[in-house]
Length: 257
Image (tube, rainbow, N blue to C red):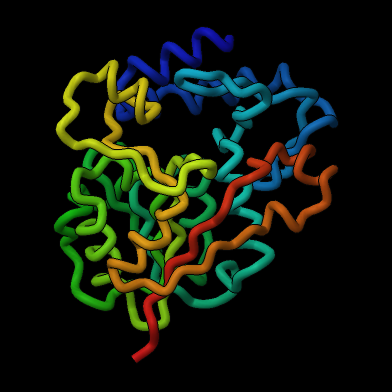
């Protein structure tokens, strides 16, 4: 299973992989039921979760029923426990929407929820993040995870996100990171997929972010909170939910006028 998932995520285009994987994994999930791990998004418990990873497989990373990964479960906890996302009336833009969130967010009557992406079969709007077809100051909340590393001019994309956000709005903008690097490693001139994968972890990445990521967001105009929710949770809860132990949540806010 570990080998098959690794090959599939590396070689099958996302638009095809997503169409079939959720149906297959829900069946697989029936054989993984137990009470060692729990997906907080669904409340379903497992004796183990599925491995996941393109280059280096991580044990118990993928919850089969929701298709959530460690970072998705952490974001869910942040939204649920540290914000009023589930109760306030918000206009939400979800860029490159993750399957684990889409149906749940659509069912929430307090949200006016729009998804956008170039390729995703679930996107409401087919769009380029560098030139989004939305008016200035449209959205209260923007969710955009593991997208900016794919964009040659990431700061321009950040400015587009800033543009479509209302004053006082906020965004969750996660990217792959090396927390032991002070400076982001990037080179948009690299075209060899194997070299990109070796250096930036994936064949279609232009960079691997370091701790200066917050400075890039500030260049785009944001006020940035580096939220360390996972560090504040009990260790047993981090293990039960299988959360990323050192993940920092980057909450980018547009200042009120």
